[in-house]
Amino acid sequence: MAGADPEELLPLSPAVFHVLLALADAERHGYGIIKEVEARTEGRVRLGPGTLYGSIKRMLEQGLVEESGERPDPGLDDERRRYYRLTGFGRRVAVAEAERLSGLVASARAKQLLALAGAGL
Amino acid sequence: MRARGGGGSLSRRAYALLLAAYPSEFRREYGREMELVFAARRREESAALARLWGEALLDLALNAPREHLERFGKGGGLMKTLRTAALAAAAYAFTLLVVAPLFARNVGSLPGFLASLFDALISTGLIFNFVYLLLTLTRWRSGVGAVRLSLVVTALFVAGLITLMVVSLGSPARLNFNVYATQVLSLLFWFTVHLWWVRRKGRAVPPATA
Image (cartoon, rainbow over all chains, first blue to last red; front, side):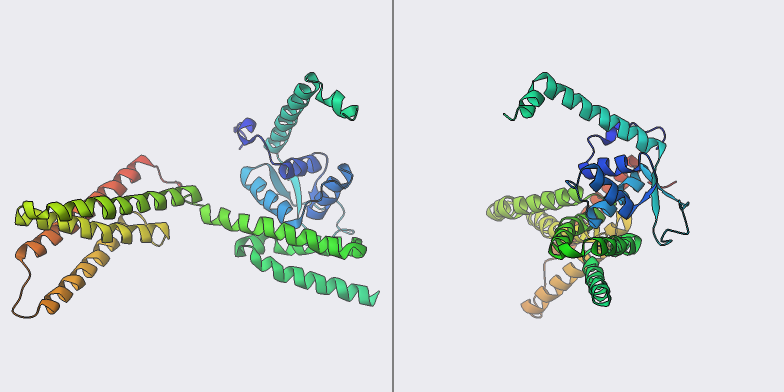
């Protein structure tokens, strides 16, 4: 996947992008990803187990994430849980999707949609 | 505390049972972790049990069919399978509604052997292609193996039909030699067409694994 073009996977589904964002700064297990997404979106996005592991399965196949053999703190952690981390390709895909979304936001701003939304119109 | 823990355990067991809705490979790979996630949520959100179950059931209803569809589509592609089935249905409809009535109307003006040959090509073609489609769409057989098995099944079917006709006509009534000859020719024709097709496809598409 190292030579693959990140653009080919865009646009990402919201669930996949949220998982990539959750793993951007740390390795996490499934429930850790769910809690991070929930905290970051202030409870607006709650990933179900089926959505999460379905996304992880496809992301593993596409080489966006990989399983991590390490446990941050084996003494405190449940050994049955698997940890996941971003691959280099996964990070490039996340960056490409963020840039795509940023471009969309810039377009909305140019059309003054954000200003209108801010004014409550 | 004990009552609450027991309730959590019951919920988790119920959720584990619901995971049977997923394909077995998916369940083997992620079922245990999905249970852990559900149990962790149950512990943290015991006050909102209805919401937790509502979300779990919605999550299941949305994702279990998707995993099944994805599994079904792997290898050949679900859309490809549906497209092949739709094309076959259209070809069958055209043969039965246009070709067969046209042949029936003009059969009298054709020489005996040619009439028999057209008849055999249509009837054997319908059976041969049906068997071949059944074998390949269900992925029971593929390639040359599917063509060979289609030939055997169709030949047995046609032989059975001819035997039935001979028996029903009664001795000493016999079928015209043309019927036997054209059925054999027709079987060979469909066998050759399919064999040529799968070999051509085999050359065009390189094998997936080295």
